Length: 255
Ligand code: PGA
Image 1 (cartoon, protein in one colour):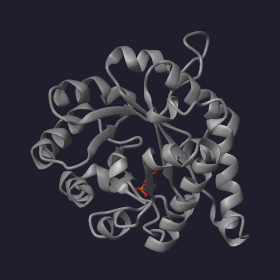
Image 2: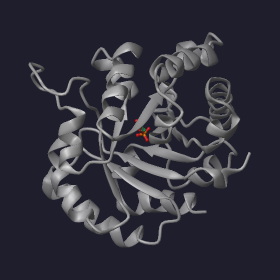
Image 3: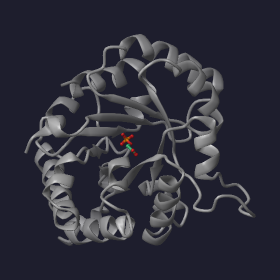
Image 4: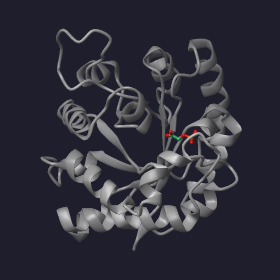
């Protein structure tokens, strides 16, 4: 495994946190801390913070992402935002299929695939989230669950398009719980995902694809997780809301 073949990406997922003033404060504090980052840094913010975040990060290496997008280009979808609207704003990334969307908002493997398709069509980069629940892990079906999620989401995604897809393995039981997967557990599933990509797209494509881990990653455990051969970055929730914590994770990912 040669990690240098793929970019390390640390992405913050702010979820439904930070108003505009708070977003500005956080980004202003963060920018000097990550200016020499040895990895790609992405901040995925609520829609209402996107414009503020884009303005403050202009000309820096920090990229801005949204947390979801709809699959249609426009239309009667009250409350939704299209991938094209995000692109027009200057957003480069979008999280697709986060487990909170799957758990609380009826997201299915089918809607995840449609949203990823829309993101790719709009020229965005997708951070595709997959992960098993505690019940599924305990039933010994983690790999089956992950395989189905990955295959359904990537059906119809070409090898060329996959350059604009980051996968994020996020075990549902580790998200926001303070219960991180062990380095071995996380590394094992990330390795499984890479093997799956190799079967679907070939070794070379699998080797160049960034696969993150997410779920209670923090300043303390980041270095150990990121040292795993198949963990190429992180999707960070809680710890992305504090500049020093997030910056420490970015530093741990520097190559
Ligand atoms: P967490 O969230 O770091 O707070 O566990 C990760 C995520 O949901 O992406």
